[in-house]
Image: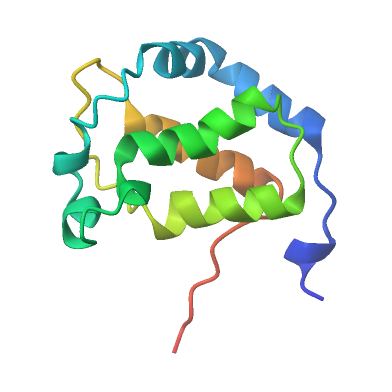
Length: 127
């Protein structure tokens, strides 16, 4: 069993981290028009047959949005899903463009910080 699997999730820590950027998260979730205009600015979306799960809006809504809406009360499985979104499905290239002004990379980076605070990180194969 790895340390990542044995560490318990601390919802209070997650909530404290969410509170640090509460205004930005609330605004981003409220103003996202689901217009998909951010999609074409994402090279991962464009090179993955335009799979909707690679749209920047999908990534931020299903990472920081999920954490915020659940008030940090998530289980390890949910955090692992978020981990995959914020590390495997996004490289934080900062190319995503939102016509509503949402700073999507900042939202995804914050989701990474929250995952990291719970010992949930992407493990890279060194070979």
